[in-house]
Length: 276
Image 1 (tube, one colour):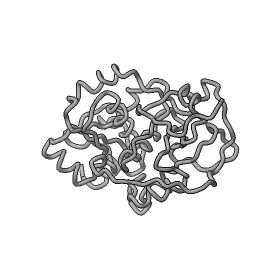
Image 2 (cartoon, rainbow, N blue to C red):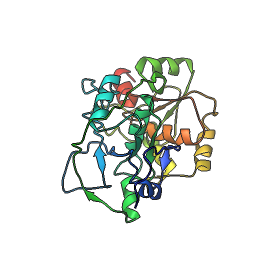
Image 3 (cartoon, helix red, strand yellow):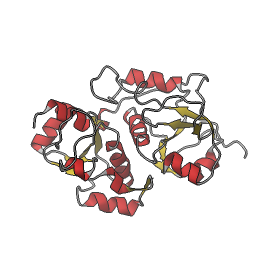
Image 4 (cartoon, one colour):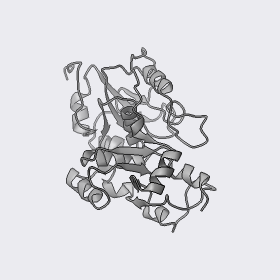
């Protein structure tokens, strides 16, 4: 395949495996593996030319007691540059589950002012299902990029923000956890974390929006959100630790909602700081 033009632009929040395969030789394309808790293993397979986006260790505030906490602007910029990401890069991110932690990576880039980024719909499983080429996992050892982060604070909400939004009902708070966890009929998977919900929140399990790790069609996503919020309503998404809330944010964005934000600490923080 011939090299594509350097100024590839991504105009949609998700792209298909066919699109990625067609555009894989674009000079400014950066493919990121955003699988949570993934470490380098030369026995593993990846999409060719993938770079590992280490959410836990490189793109989180590791000094924060809660998991996968929002990094500083300086940290995000430094680590993105270390991955060779430039100001003009077209970024596609995937994960090993389909769409799971990859949505968090997409949201982080949005929160730091970068829009030329998309999630691979169906992730690595969809790539494998299509029998497209793979390679053994490799570490990125190339040149640093010139990526510049510009924090957009409206994308993330923190404990005091959500506390006020819950009390004053200024936002629709949508919880991405399973119905069992939301309704307190099954325990939280995190040891020692109490069951419960943020007051005045509603539930939309992120898995309801996926089929085999692939997002359902736009019309189906619109229907799912329409019973919970109007398109002009400000929305805060929550989950267990700020990952799958971003799946809801991705789906809501596709469905045409604009005033979206994610509660970074989510239930892990709320359930730890607020007594039942």
